Amino acid sequence: MSMIARMVRLGVVADCRVPAAGLTVLARAASGAGLGPIWVSDRAPTGPLRPDQLAVLADSTRAGGCALAHDADCTLWAPTGPPPAPRGLMAGAQPVVLVPAWPARSLEQVVSAWSSAGGDPAELVVELPVSIGRTRAEAAARTGDWFGPFGDPTVHGLFGSLEDCQDQVASLLEKGIIELRCILPEADQIDVIAQLSAVAVGLRARGGPGSPRSPAPPPPAGWGSPPRP
Image 1 (tube, helix red, strand yellow):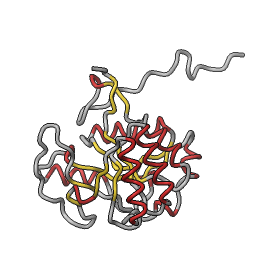
Image 2 (cartoon, helix red, strand yellow; image 1 turned 120 degrees about the horizontal axis):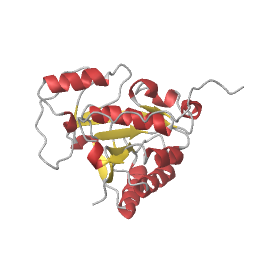
Image 3 (cartoon, one colour; image 1 turned 180 degrees about the horizontal axis):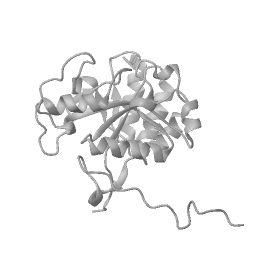
Image 4 (cartoon, one colour; image 1 turned 60 degrees about the vertical axis):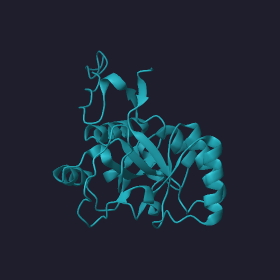
């Protein structure tokens, strides 16, 4: 078995604000990038999907071999409510509690409350607004009112360059979170998916849920030396 693996499971949200043809392209791109499942929600503003959207999405995911998941598959943790009762996670089972994104959310507080209730962070599916670009400026250009109901991705999402997002995923993995539900920006979704496919790739032997991150590599020899005359 290869030691290279995706350390966190990444799924993308099928957003009802995207035309049916766009959902077909999104599903094909996510399937080709090895992301999954495609999440369907009944919650505004990303859901519910219209019948035509749901039909093309079902056909596209079936053709691409990508699973569909639904909010109803999980227990929803209401933003203003206490954590639901932990049910325990059987070996090999999927996370069962969906933590939706909302503007005032603090993942530190969410994980702390869940752990205090006796839950394993691996039981949580964490919903995140995501904007990845080749630079932070490009990622910032892809944000806006689209993410308004979910909060600023720079605060509790995945935001910035590929390297920035890799570091953010590593931080979530360190907390024990193993599944992310990604809300994509309105613009350039295919490019974001292509970069998203690489943010959680790592070495099985060097990381895992709850494991501390590896130290950053040292700077190149001579880095920061005084300029030559």
